[in-house]
Image (cartoon, rainbow over all chains, first blue to last red; front, top):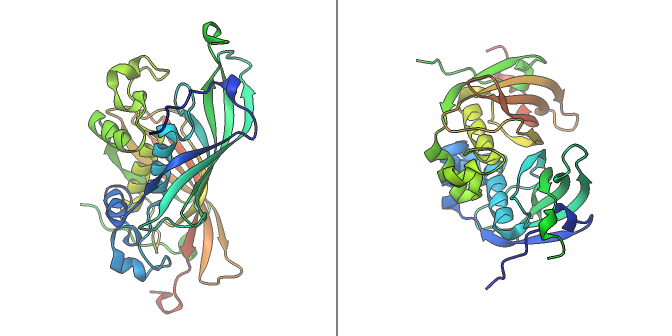
Length: 157
Length: 157
């Protein structure tokens, strides 16, 4: 059993703070199902045809890796109060995600900036690495999150 | 009936070239189904709870908008030879995607750079805007694609 993590407000976040999500095993069935709906290209939906592409075998859509990363983040990977509300960021897929990979998300706070115009919130820059069982980075996302300040009436509690 | 578009090689792409995808209508059922699997936050899965969030109602996960954008691109939105193989890019969601929205993807070639080390390919920078029926941009993705050169034996054909 994993204890539900305490939700973090802007006031709780520090540069260099790190988080690790639970893991998720991705298989061929998940890869093909996602890709049939959203990214129906041979290297994502057809294991045989995929062998003859530059990937040399079936790989997950980058957007599938992104969606799974989000699920791992939302399920306690980074326990931000108010949820993971992203304004955008930079995404890269340095290595493909393949069937049988075990994915885990490692995150680090890069910047914490209270809003000047909105005293109840701030913007946090976070570096989110999705790694497989070999510690290869399959996705790097550096993004900005909108994070609420701790409400006055809950300070010190 | 729509004619199958001719597949474009690096040699066919020019800065400023534009493409428009077919449209897709997103509804509440699609939004909730995707979010239950990948982004189970109240503003994506619970229409009532969503009213009390900063979005004021149900909105699609940004990763759902990204995945749908990919489908529209793959289905002829940008007919690149060899498929849409992305190395990454910058993504933003300037406006939320809401139930009932009609999405369409407008793309423009920003840069075309033949590879120095790999004479059979090049890197294309593309600006991909996903717009709703009001012409609001719900997603902006500026990314790099790996695009093959036209094979020697098919030149001039």
